[in-house]
Image 1 (cartoon, rainbow, N blue to C red):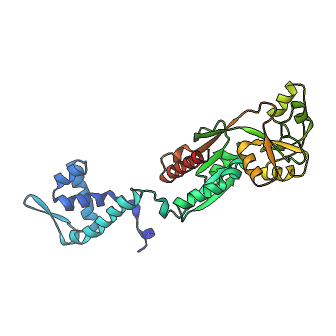
Image 2: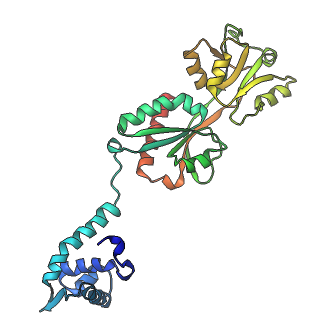
Image 3: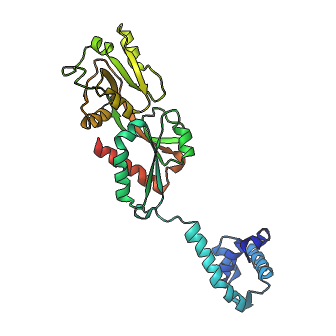
Amino acid sequence: MSFTDVPWRNIDLNLLVAFAYLYRYQSVSVAAEKSYVSQSAMSHSLSRLRALFDDGLFERKGHKMVATERAHQLAPAITRLLDCVSNDILTSAPFDPTEYEGICRIGLTDYAEFIFAPSIFDAIRQQAPKAQVSFVNVNRSNYVALAEQEKLDIVIGSIAAPEPAFQSHHLYTERHVCIADPDYIAFEHGLSKLDFANIEHALVSPDGRLATGVDDTLQAEGLNRKVTVATRNFMTIQSLLIGRQLVAIVPKRMAEVACANSQLGYFEPPIVVPDFDISILWFQRKTSDDKNVWLRNLLRSLMAKSG
């Protein structure tokens, strides 16, 4: 018989718990005490058990309720079933990264993906060699929707005021530098504000806008810059800067990686460009989840080492 053929609404599985206590203690009163129900409730359960199995199940002999042959036959199966519910359903096995074969889904802003994706992959695979890693590009305007849609475990990036559904942990504070091709822009001794404003600018723009707070700072000093190209992807900016009279303001860690892999160089901006915080975010509901706790600790440790 399939489980779908059983009239479950007519069956109270709590009766199996009552059976287990009666079988173990051979007493209605003791079974009631151990299962924290009244003696009358246990007696009622016994009556229902007898009707369910069409057998007396437990017969009074002296001061004991002795199991019938039918009860002895049922006892091993009922014990296995209750153990299964207790151990396999109600008790979660401790999370073991070495045995984890699922997917670690991590949302990264363009900045975080460029800087950390390779090291995050290595760190996860070192501790969880059977796991897969999925990086999802996010930004401050879409991370909430993508975290739900893509079932993200973690989000890493510059998100100043996380939504209430998220918890966050500050990783470090990043600062900005200017990056350019030294063969086309002479910045060995830095640039004046005027020279900086007169050079054409490339802009990393997550939202597609062609102006930032830098323009407000320059305008306050009577200067204007000319942004001639903008893109959401830093890799595009990096390619554009090579061989052109273009300058871009980027996070220092991005500049360090880019300059190590190309002929580009970086220098301090001649104006004040505010720092920004990089944080790790996760859903509040996942705060106590074993996998999420492991992943958060792993990423915090990784960021601390790379700082």
